[in-house]
Image 1 (tube, rainbow, N blue to C red):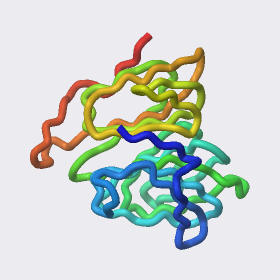
Image 2: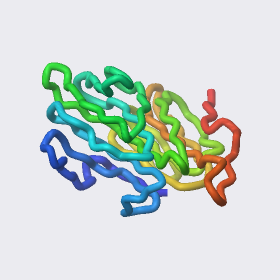
Image 3: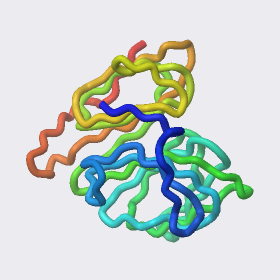
Image 4: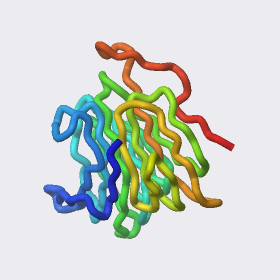
Amino acid sequence: MEYFDIRKIPVSLWKNGAGETRELCCFPPATRDFNWRASIASIAGNGEFSAFPGVDRVITLLEGGEVTLDGGNAFHHTLKRFQPFRFSGEQMVRAQLSEGQMSMDLNIMTRRERCQAKVRVADRTFTTFGARGGMVLVLSGAWQLGDKLLTADQGASWQDEHHTIRLLKDEGKILYSAISWNPTWPLTAVSQVDDLSLAG
């Protein structure tokens, strides 16, 4: 288990000057040939996304104005806050900011032949099951994970095991991504049980 605070993560500026990225986690660590990775992107201007052949992406708007993604003939989609959107990394995509407002987004990337991600927002205590790895990012409220208290802009990532993420106040939101390995990937045993159990 690795914990993080996005306010303390180093920033990498985009080559086109239209934004910046904070890497939350990468498995295996520090490699371009990742199985999966999660990052926060701050988009400051209109521009093209980088292409990632063989990679699936799930993007979730966290803060700021709505962002319209123009994927040519493939799709034309406007990101809404806390509503994940999936697309292929090789797809050429242009981002258009709403009225020039900066936005902050969570990006989950998975190597298509190896694994896939499910991304959702939870508002109550839950336990993860059947996932090979995962990560959480607190959007609001106070949450208990392991021996850590997590509040807004804090989170954690892991590669195995199951975990209970407990809401400590009446209200709160947390973004959760579960990673499952594709059955065809060598040396992989994928559980078919649901990866999120919500407790009442």
